[in-house]
Every structure is written in structure tokens, then in C-alpha cells.
Amino acid sequence: MNRILAAAKTIASARRTRTPLPPLDADVAPHDEAEGYRIQAAVADLLLPDFGALVGYKIGCTSAVMQEYLDIPHPCGGSVFARAVHESGASLRHRDFVRVGVECEIAVRLAHDLAPSAAPFTADAVAQAVEAYLPAIEIVDDRYVDWQTLGAPTLVADDFFAAGCVLGKPVARSVAPDLLEVVGRAVVNGNEVGRGTGADVLGHPHHALAWLANHLAGGKGLRAGQIVLTGSLVKTVWLGAGDEVVMDLSGLGTVAVDFRA
Image 1 (cartoon, rainbow, N blue to C red):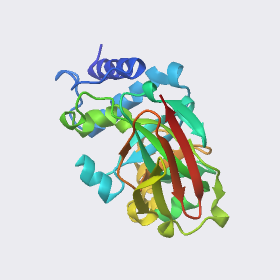
Image 2: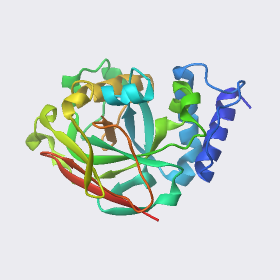
Image 3: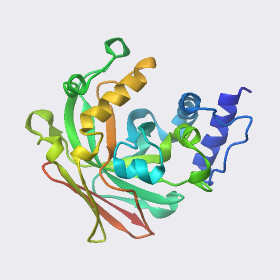
Image 4: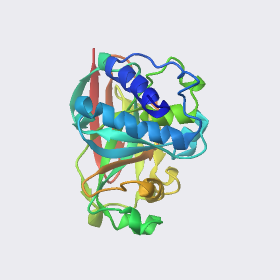
């Protein structure tokens, strides 16, 4: 068994059983982020029977507050699977996660492909591929014994905390507000716990989308209909059983979820 597959099997098994992942053995741990992404792709193949089709991507570390929190100074990508995408108002079980958290995001749904042959992509170019924006809650899971000991390559290999998302109603690009002026508010149990703007996401969410399109240009690229979570406007909020979450994004609407005991 090669190193990539061995690491992927360890990660996929931990994901399925919700077992906190310790540092990978030195003989299979990714040496760098490029190798981490190779493991990530193998993990996706292994998880398809359990989690459904790959329907999009998340981008982490696109804001200063998240880069400082995770001590990683650049964006990182992860997978979004069909069975982990929920509509606003969903009620999820808290025990289905190791340590669940939420982030406030501007999601995009693509109208057409961003094919590798068209790279390199600019923010202006990827904007033309957007069909709609959606207020979104990214669900993250600290499914690690101690994430601070793993390093970015292993976190990338395990989809960078990704555990799904909750999506609000789409707003067509033609009528959407200026994303730089969108204010996102994270509200838990009626109390505001975080606030940020679209400008906090690499200067504009389209910059994050361009980063992802260029990152994926070495493979299949981005496809029409896929969802991309462009990065959190606020620092991750970790939750307890019974917590109710609302993300309010001005001009885009609200999205809600609760994590029942």
C-alpha cells in the first residue's frame, strides 16, 4: 500500500467513526501541502459511498482573523459532499460531530465551468461564472486529538475541518449587493458572537474563488452547479448541544441551523 492511500484510509476511517485523529505516523504523514492535497483526493474517493457525491468546495483561511487563529497565512481548500449540505432551518444532532463549530460565509453557485484550460483566473473572470450568492453556515468539526500538533499538510489532507454547510436562499448575481459591503453577523442563542464583512475575505470573495479555480486547474477544475464556500467572515464559533445558530448577511439574507442534544 502506498503512503498516500495508507494516510487516506486512516483519515477516512476516523471520519466514518468520529474518532479524534492523532498525528499521522511519520511514514505516511504528508511532507507538504501538495502531498496533503493528493491525500485529500484519495480521502474523497473513499468517502463517496458514505457522504455522497462531491458537490463543491470550501476555502479556509481567507480572512485575517482566521489566518491568525489557525496560524496559516494563506488559503486552504477542502471538499463538500452532497449528504452534508442542508437547507436553512435544518436541525442536526450535536453528537454526530466530534467538536462542532460554525462559520459565517458567502457561498457561490456556479453557472458554468471554470475549466483548467482557461487558467490562470482573475477575480473578474471568475465573477462571470457565478450564478448566485447564498448566505451560508459552514459546519466545521475539530475532529482531532489536538489540531495544533498536526500541521497544515495533514489538516489539508482531512479537508481542513470541513463537515458540511447550511445554505439560505440564493440571490442572483444580477441583483446581488456589492459583496464588499455585505456585513455578516454570527448569532448564537440570540446573542451576536461575531461580525465581519465581505471585504475581509482576501479583499473580496471573488479573490478567494479565483484562488480556488487556479488551485484546481491542475486537475478537474470547477464545474457548473458546484457550490463554493468562500471563507469565514468571523472567527470560528464552537457550539454546545442545543445551540441555535443564525447567520445574517446584509443584502443576502439569513440562514439558520440548530444542533439538538
